[in-house]
Image 1 (cartoon, rainbow, N blue to C red):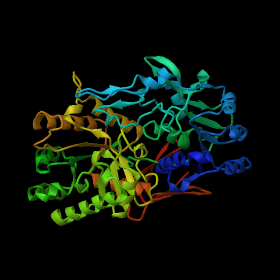
Image 2 (image 1 turned 180 degrees about the vertical axis):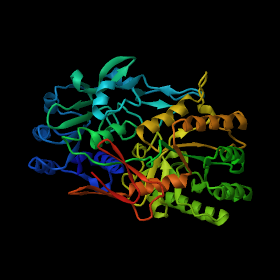
Image 3 (image 1 turned 45 degrees about the horizontal axis):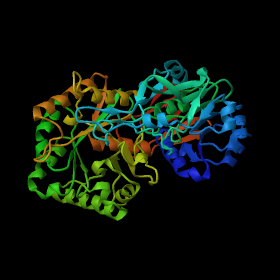
Length: 529
């Protein structure tokens, strides 16, 4: 069992980690722990336990030191208390003002991106020791934007310096042999971001942020630590991959039809020629005009998907649970009545997905929602799809933050650089990659000069993705159905190993399970050992 432990006044952060770990290792293998429970495992030398400890209290240090002297895996997130820092030979101090300033960045200008001066740099040799894999993103900004101060097309959230759970917890100086990642500003070392202590019978992984890397593909290192680190000596847990077994990458795309639908026809024809599925997210106001009923029916007939994009495209889903419920229900009713299709998944307007909206959508009968953005609702932006924090089973979230717009194309010789990099990062992290565009309207063309320019950019991205190998292109319903089934796959520990059981009506694509260096195929159920 993987236990998540945090002080009583920090349970909201623990809830985030329980949700993130359950998305990777299954609902049955993750639980909210207690300090008394940790004490009990100290008397279980052959037990199969991992502990994720968030901002540990100073009084917990003796028990953690004992745990680090036993056969166990320990993940410590956030601030190291003085005694534990001394045990690990770490020197800590508060974040200095210059580092706090360097963690922020200005909004992005059109055709440019914007990044913080402060960056995370992963060290290649220690990362190979952790998982046997080269680092897929050796260096990245703490915060970056591709469109004003809203979007980060590379997909990750902001590492802040504001004292929140999303912040760097402290400045820490590690022994060179323990450092996995550094915080740097203009190549100057400003302390550690992550470390690994592997000298004894236990392994301890530390990340200098209370939520760890739950909102970036660096989460793969957490998965690798649990599933494949020191597999002969220490317990390991299966990890449910987001990419189905047998594929090198998985991709889904859509158009969010904020003001027009029929204008998407030209791009839809491009995707038909390329043989790539196409999806449309519709909202009720657009469908008041019957001319916009034709293309959605044709998209469905050609194997595409239709999703809800609310009733009125209201910011923050209308601002309350009641409004969100009506936005979701009204949209579904209108789509059913106008084009004869029952939607099961929604796309958040402006990618804003507060907790009350998730609850309202679930109560309106939706099976999941697509959102996630660096600007807001940080707890919805996660590296893996699955049941969101504060939501019940049966409803999932999926973060898709890559916006293929003309005004996000970079000036210079490589205008498509960031979009290609976003796909590559998703592949290296093992994520199901999602990207979006919008149809043109009379008011706004999203930075595209012509349909020809837009079509060329989309084709370039498709061609780049196809170079990865065997790529699964899925419509949004297919992608969300697979991710929904994955989120509700049961993993049960047995004396013979871990029994993995998929839901009865699972997606036709086989599930990939990573365990002790293996990539295992699960059609319906299987024993992992």
